[in-house]
Length: 247
Image (cartoon, rainbow, N blue to C red; front, side, top):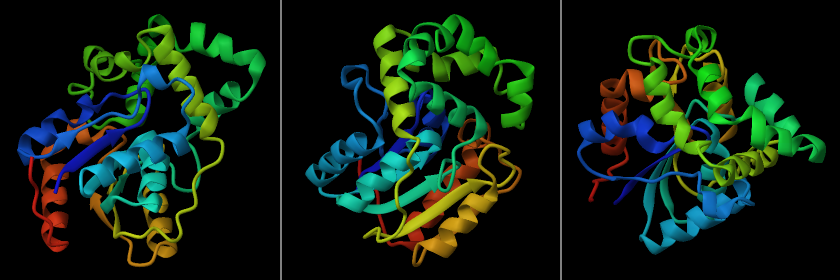
């Protein structure tokens, strides 16, 4: 069964490159697509579900702002196992919440897409010492060049930024976590200040049969900083669920 890794805007699927290398199988796909600039999380989830059904079922791992679209896909079918990691379950992090509010106002969308999310401003902001101290464990792993390689693709062109604005606008309403027709797990960096472990605890208490595995000390970028721990947790979980991967 294919294993698909998803990450939300503005990060690219490159955040999983070391994890995928350690697992050695599966397939990485991204959520952000400049050809679908009007899509929000619900539309992304519908398309993702259709892809999953066509593939004959998939294991879906969603990190960050891809979590709502992954939940929507799982609710619609085609997902054999849903794994969520450090993303919005009950609320958005303060930065995304502010951007979603700006994206929801017609008067600020153009400013957001053309100015505030331009890579000249956005990448240095993400790679600043203040931002890195809030989201990473190892600043030597997540230096400015690394942040740019992960995030620049999501804001490189105006079409990319329009897609990001559309997605942010849709995040003002998060999906319902109840009645997901597949097993749901969380693999959570438990030191993430943006999405703390209480989000995973809420998942456990809301979704029947949900459980979570902690990445001790992992912050928001734990797939890049601690790929060996995440890869091990994913493989352990697949074994528990009796799922074997195929490429």
